[in-house]
Image 1 (tube, rainbow, N blue to C red):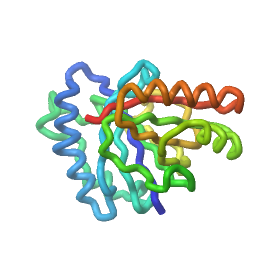
Image 2 (cartoon, rainbow, N blue to C red):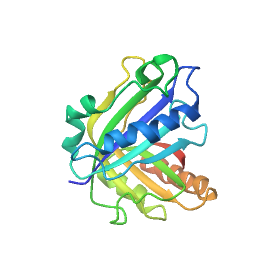
Image 3 (tube, rainbow, N blue to C red):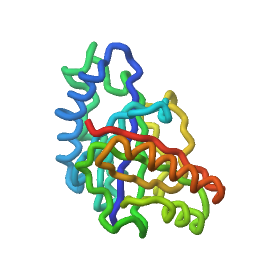
Image 4 (cartoon, one colour):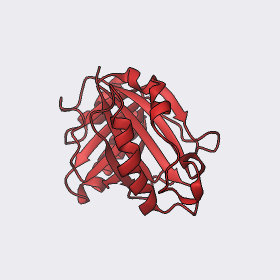
Length: 207
């Protein structure tokens, strides 16, 4: 089953700079995670690019062949929370808030799923009936990957994780040009209003 691990993070400690955080994530965390049997195929990292997304700074997308991977206890055992690159000898959980969501792919989109490699993406969380959902997507141009929530968000950093309502559908558009972002979001918003569909759009730039 094609699936997606969708991970949102925000730095909360002034002692952790984005540069240090990205160094830890790219050189420590991702290699550890991808070394686990059954792990994701890749890791696609992004930073938030506009004020629509006030609560999350970073997004990582992990394509999965098997959704059961996210419930494997080996993840906790083999992914370390301490490392010399982190400031003050602190655990990463003392420095960030972290939310993970599990999604499974659904029929629709351009048939290719998440490709990665594009500089810009727009993520769209959608609530509404199937008929309205398809009407929304038929109203915009471009390919997309479509997913449905499999498991409620896990606030991996504890109770201080920002609270964001999670809608059941996720659609990801991968874009070549920054100027396409506003055009796409505007088209989605205009199409969603008469259909009475609730959408939440965020734009991201590849790190």
